[in-house]
Amino acid sequence: MALKITVIGTGYLGATHAAAMAELGFEVLGLDIVPEKIAMLSEGRVPMYEPGLEDLLKRHVAGVPGATGRLRFTSSYEEAGQFGDVHFICVNTPQKHGEYACDMRHVDNAVESLAPHLRRPALVVGKSTVPVGSADRLAARLAELAPAGADAELAWNPEFLREGFAVEDTLHPDRIVIGVTSDKSEKVLREVYATPVAEGSPFVVTDFPTAELVKTSANSFLATKISFINAMAEVCEAAGGDVVKLAEAIGYDERIGKKFLRAGIGFGGGCLPKDIRAFMARAGELGADQALTFLREVDSINMRRRGHMVELARDAVGGSFLGKRVAVLGATFKPDSDDVRDSPALNVAGQIQLQGAQVTVFDPKGMENARALFPTLAYAPTALEAARGAHAVLHLTEWREFRELDPVGLGEMVAERRILDGRNALDPDYWRDAGWTYRALGRPMA
Ligand SMILES: NC(=O)c1ccc[n+]([C@@H]2O[C@H](COP(=O)([O-])OP(=O)(O)OC[C@H]3O[C@@H](n4cnc5c(N)ncnc54)[C@H](O)[C@@H]3O)[C@@H](O)[C@H]2O)c1
Image (cartoon, rainbow, N blue to C red; front, top):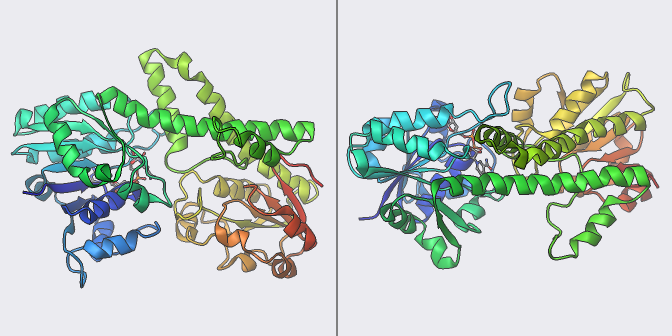
């Protein structure tokens, strides 16, 4: 009999995972505690923007005409417990308020809500990003609470999907990592991931702590790479160098590589910032804080970029934002997503507004979320409208739509043709040829 799968927590990770599991042929039940999400998903609608996800969902959600019907949603843990052989925990693990540490409340709640309904053999699989040591603790809790006793096992299976490519990354992962304590759990997970493994996805089997650490160390490495090039941007500015050329030149070295070497206003989102902080906090608890002190510098380089972008813009408009209009292109933390969690773009927009400018934001997909988070900023329905009367236009999220803007047309809307590229993603010559002053982080003024 084919395995039946539940996915607990249907946000960016869980909704994608649930739809992907249905695509792989499994019967899937998604569970969330937010009734509006369950209502939308049950109609085949996605509560966030993720390319390709709505199509995938519609192909499988029961009740949608022509769908396979393999995917359903519920808010009942009892139903989930009865239904599933494998239960993926995909709930959020935010930063604790006022601390660096990870807030494990939602994971703990999910395990404690599910466990009492596990009356037959089942595998609970953690996918959320958690501090090392959590899986050991949760396995003990599961054994305590599940009526099935030792037949209810735990595994850890960190997730590496990238928002914007979530569907592709889930269906064709570049690696699958599982932390297990029994051959039985490994066998079940090999069955779940049989299709991507057959296609060539590497399958790494390890223990709990290593599986947990793989995720946090991968994120720490990526954050370090971004902050490295941003540190080089600071040095380039001091020395009159060009960080874009520098990145191109060092990127030809295969050991360094070109990816994640675009200097700009730094990383944000619901993962990297909170994950490196939680990693530092956990290392401190383990007595290994010295090993990760470099992450404090990675974090501060990153946060400095936002302030630096504000200074660059203030300088560009003549030293003060008072009475100035600023257009901000981009609100999400990265393109092809509607996610504005810890978004550098919105952070910069907010700071500039607090310093007295009238800031108008446009983002192709993130407007609703941005408005909810920063209701006092002004929002325009198009990039052109956002630019109307602006003394400076700030390019802060590298959407393709912004790279394709016509500088001549945009030039007719603004008060001053001044573009500041916070992502080093626009072509300076193209903008300068249309009469704009182009400035970017880590590049000479020209
Ligand atoms: N978003 C990503 O790109 C990504 C990538 C890899 C790993 N992760 C990790 O995956 C986890 C989830 O991230 P996300 O971005 O999907 O978060 P999210 O906030 O989008 O989704 C979490 C969902 O869990 C639900 N939830 C909370 N408590 C619940 C409970 N007790 N029972 C059932 N549902 C509950 C929430 O209502 C929400 O819908 C985090 O640990 C994150 O670090 C995320």
